[in-house]
Image (cartoon, rainbow, N blue to C red; front, top):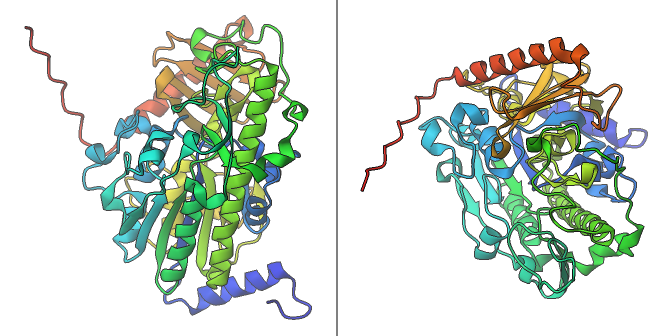
Length: 491
């Protein structure tokens, strides 16, 4: 508790400085608590401006940390994004473009958590950090594409997912309302019976709380992976109440002919049209998604409370993020994969003891987390890492380390180069699949594609060259070349 006349923020700052001074050496050996949500768009968080979906626990972390407004993932779906920030390589460097572990490509090179493990940290993951199938892998309680070498211990959080008892509805491809509640990567809402601990994320929070208490006297790197708000949108009933009736949900602005000026590859794999979701179902999808976000927020609160009870707030770097963003009806797009900001952008909050709260508008990538935490904990940054140390931004939020963010959508063979004014999207390395170019200053919601306008051709050509140069730089790494493919024998 702060002394009379000292604010809570001042007390935290003093405590952080005292810890730093008391630590051996110039840099303290902080713990790392890495909290990652699955398929979470920054637009759903109240600390990022959402006035409907309240996230008080994530907000409280933002209020004492640095909140980044221009953070981008390196792959717009789970597998490549998670393999990238955990391995330290861009997806096209490690060729981790799907859902497999990056281990076969990185060999004996240490992953993010493994590097801390090699420096005498206890490392553990609870639930999904590397890729794990949702809902299938969660129903079975399996490891998915996890990497055993990364952890001292690892724990899965089995849950019923779409099979949870309660009131459910399949929203996708169910225009007549006759389809039963189903599994898979399907838009399903289930207002579930029972409490938080019935479900995977409730179990994940409980295990994380237990591990914090057990390991409070040693250095740890703890990865806490929540699977919501990934479909199915399943949460205990109480989390749906603020969003009902669902017809009160407001859908994003729609523009007639929005798809007319973009290439076929730029139309997302899930849309209101191909999922046959009318306005009622779209609004219920938003409400179900928000309920899942509220459920995750409550679980985050339990983990943060445990850290406080253990007296570790001033000894622990806390990171909150998502593997990528998510569309909630913008451009009539839903889910991930798209390279628009709603899908490629991610929430990112980094809270370091002794650092003042701030908002940073400089570009950062999830790939930067590995070198940054190594630096903050006094570890040598491996030269091979393709991310950048952004620790200076935590003291000076106006500091820049990047002029642009780079992201890929391997499913669409797409590449995003996101600069301050322009978002450039290219499909296929030779751009044969089409190009999108948006002026974010004049068109922040990305409705008008400028790529074919004569006056923009020089700019398009410049971006094509920049993209080619970026890919060349990414592939110039210390990884061995891939093994040649074996030719199939003719029968």
